[in-house]
Length: 192
Length: 192
Image 1 (cartoon, rainbow over the protein chains, first blue to last red):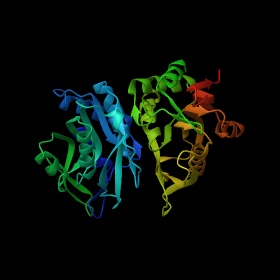
Image 2 (image 1 turned 30 degrees about the vertical axis):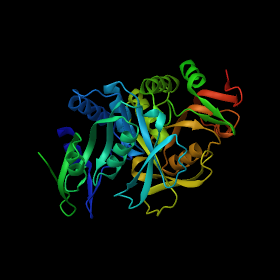
Image 3 (image 1 turned 180 degrees about the vertical axis):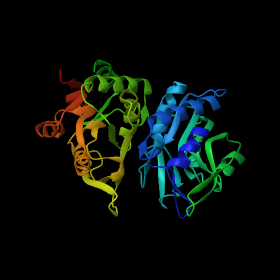
Image 4 (image 1 turned 90 degrees about the vertical axis):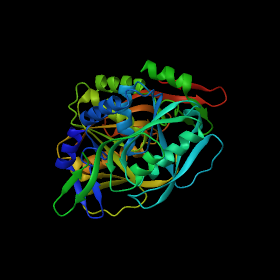
């Protein structure tokens, strides 16, 4: 998605340790006009899939998923993060290791919001090691629903998440895939 | 807002301890069609205010703020919650005590996303004791910006938050004000 790549080039800030900061428009301040273009593009890419619900994860996936949902005409469920939980049989959960925050947590979804047989589109802002997406897939499977696809705004192509998910036969659509970045020159290489 | 009240009556679940669960449509599963009606109503109520930016707080404020922002044509900034932070001069923060989770945390906003003189509309899903809204107001003041108003989806009118904010001269618009609820009969009394 050219508009998104241009925006990353213009407003993204690269920090040492392969950190790409896009908090100016994506995950702290949110450019809702851009989010609409992102939502429209997800709909274009998943036009041939039946989607019953969008599943995302707090916090930065929520805004993108909410706007994208308008193009699909479906509700959004967002998974919650908790460091410890008491499962009472009404919640589905999966463990996730965060790349950015270097900690482990559980992602949780109330089981009544994912029904058997539903077609679920997973949406998130970033895909790096794939742990969050993998956790969401586990939850969808536990609900006996189907992952219809995974829509990612920015994929770090040099980390293993995209490869792992695609090898499992999942359809991953990333609107920008970053293959490399250089903090010294503040340049980003995108996959074609 | 009649549509919202009807929805609360239909899908809200009242638990002992004055807990109103609306996770079916507001803060876990999100009904984006309803969010659009909420956004439209916020715009109608704040039509006479100049709004430069919407400020909300993770996680459940984000979806509502993102959809509402479309009616105002402005970006959204969401404050982050952290249990401990290292302030490096580029962040604004305020302490908040959570009613639901019975814990204290800091709300944080990067200072470059709130500029002096900007007119900020604060949006959140719930107003109870007013701590979160108060924290956001403190951050807006610290940025030398102005709170143009506070838009709340559900106010618990029997708790002190709304009173405290209004007594400070802040304009609070709550789309549904709950004056009482009864877990035994599952009934909600709304303010007229």
